[in-house]
Structures are given as C-alpha cells and as structure tokens.
Length: 111
Length: 113
Image (spheres, rainbow over the protein chains, first blue to last red):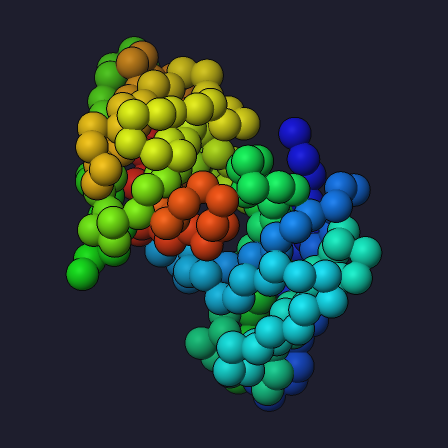
C-alpha cells in the first residue's frame, strides 16, 4: 500500500521554541491532513489542506501543502507544554482511495 | 453532541474468543472507518463503510468482519481472537468518503492473551 514517510520520529524541544515536521510520499496526493493525538485519546484533526501550495493556520500551527503535491509540512510556533503528543500526517491520492497515515512524530516539550 | 463513541474502552480476551467492538456517531456522517494502532505505527485501516449498506476492506482486514448496522453504527467483530490482534482500535467517521476530514472516537484497548 501507499507509504508516508514522516520525520522526525521524535523531538525534544524547550518551551517557547518553534517546531517543524514534515511528511513525504512517493505518490501525488490531492489531500493532506494533520492530526494530534494525546496519550490515551483518539487523534484530533488540526488542519486540512486541499490545494498544492496552500498554507493554512490554526492558532500557533501552520501547515503547507507542498507544490510538488508529494509533501506537507507542519510548523508550531512558540511551543507550550500542552503541545506534547504525537502528530500524524495523513494523505489521500484521490476521492475514492482511503486515507493513509504516517507513523507519527512524538513531540516532547521541556518546560 | 457526543461525536464518535466506542465501547468498550478496555477488553482482555483469551486466544480463540470472539467479541464485537461497537462504534456510533451522532454527526449524521455517511462514512465510517475502523483502524488499528500499534506501537510505533501509524493508523492502519481495517475496514470502512463509504455509506450505509456498503463495506470495503482496508489495508489489514484479515481476522475481522464488520457490520454497518445503520447510518449511526458500525461494528467490528473478531471471530477468533489472536495475540497479533492486541492493539488499540479506533473508529472514525466523515461526512462523505470523498470528504477526508475524519473524526475519531476515543479508542478501545484490546489485549489478547
């Protein structure tokens, strides 16, 4: 099946720092989504992207749909302790294909 | 408005036992999904139902069956549980299969001994 490569696998940052993570695919996607999962909870949708080059923000989070349509990026500015969790990217090739998830980036924030 | 609910939250089975995981959504969504999540892995699709009355296999369907009981409910059945099915199971729903924004339930933690 389709594979999404998400990096980094994990990161430790100081509170207040900015964070960047990305997701790449060997296939062209028409949709990119970013989710966050807190311990013991289900994933929560953060941002959805539908157009190449699209840049969308949700508070301190900003995500971009890469212009090649094979990658996406998520940035978190001025991190705070509640940003801790696992961030998943997900992508879709076309309307009829299932969503494919990356393996996640585990973010730890040191106060 | 509870969103997506799943029962039970936790379950321990012995190898060979059967059980059904329940999922319901109150958002009037047409499409529903079952995923499993294993340590260090992303979410892998088991089965999905694009609309009431239809079901399709996902990436890892072996050992599972599903039933779309009505528009609200989508159940996942393990007929003969195996230790390899120890995992966290998530149900999700979306307005339409083509609308990719899926909303997830809180998960069921299943251990098969």
